[in-house]
Length: 217
Image (spheres, one colour):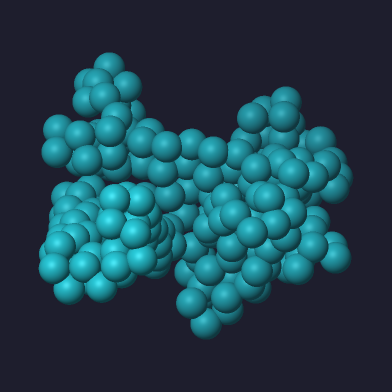
C-alpha cells in the first residue's frame, strides 16, 4: 500500500497531506508498506538453501575422504572408495539427515508475520512471531518475555529478525510475478532479501523496486 509518512507526527497517511498536522508531504515521504503471513516451511528460499547446504556438505565429505583414500592407496583409491568403504552411502545418509532436521526445524518455527517497507533509502523487513520456547529455540533467539509486544488484538508478538537493505547496496533484483515474490541480491549472485507479496500489492511494490534499482535487473 502506498502511504506518505509525516516525520513530525510520526504517522502514515493515505494521501500526500498529513491528517494530523495538515502539512503537504512530498516525494521524500513516499513509502510502500505491506504485511505477509505464512509458515516458515512455506518459504521456498529457505528450502532451497537447506538443499544447497546438504548437497554441499555431502560433496565436501565425499571429496575430502576420497582425497585421503587416494593419498593412502594411490590410483586404486577410486575403485576401493566407491565399492568397499561405504563412505559415499554414509555421506548421502548424512545429507538426508540434515534435510530432515532442517525441515523439522522449519516446521517447529511455525507461522511468521513479516512487515515490509520500501522507503526512499532502502527496504526494511521485520519478522514477527507469536513466541513459544520451541519457536525461539529453533530460530536460535532468546525467549525474552520483556521483549514481547502486543498487537492490535492484544496477542503477544516477538521481533524475531530485522534487516535493512540500502538501495545503493543492492546489486540486482529479480521479479517473480506468478509466485508473488521479489528477490534482492547483494552481491550479484547472493540472495540477500526475499519479499513475499499478496497479489493485490505486487504491482505497486514491483514498480517501486524497479524505479529504485534501474539497470540492476
